[in-house]
Length: 326
Image (cartoon, rainbow, N blue to C red):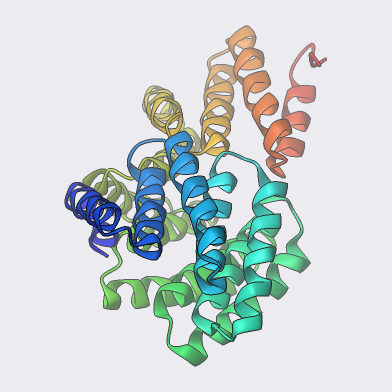
């Protein structure tokens, strides 16, 4: 698919032509596929609301067609779109239903992708053991069937998981495997994401020169692609690095850009940007602004259920006059 290389405009044009053709031919499975892919593209190019609209329409049509493989595929895409907006429980339910269908029909490629989705959701919610189980099962399956795109994505997830557990050697191994495979298969999105992950890892280890190099390449690719979720995630990592280096003007500018861009994509990235702005304000001695941004971040994390809410709560409580509004 051309949008994996970042050519979203061409992908959108092709998919709209496919949708019009399917409607003229009264070909329900083809129309369902086109709506599903338009919805998936909308996640990265326009907005999560339009993505969910297209994918919900596709799911309704898929259930009418009654093809379990098609239903499973659309459920997985819709689950990912719901995850983007922080509806983790609903996303998990869709992905579990999809995984059951994929197992029942023996579609191992689809099952590997869905195990990746479930791994991601578990990690987002702080259920690390469960996330690792899904990830390892999905990774083994993806390697067996040669589904290298999913190998990349699961390695990225497992790398993030063990990085949080401070197993930096294993994290680097996972991230570098993901990056090598992504470059080989030409998946620009995953290349950018893994460069961002390696930048985050280098940053946590105090290797700031390496972190800067990784993040600059990741940011360049993300800007070329125009993927709002990816771009906001990389910008937030760049903001974290600038904050660590005490370049407060740069950190503020980057976090502010991330907050604007991520409003079109991931709620969790909006929250991460606000948390960054809160810590910049604290470093500048602007405690009122720090509390305001911190509360905005916490409010989003409380809605999405992201495990970062505990860190933000603790940070706010440590502020002078650290009582929080409910």
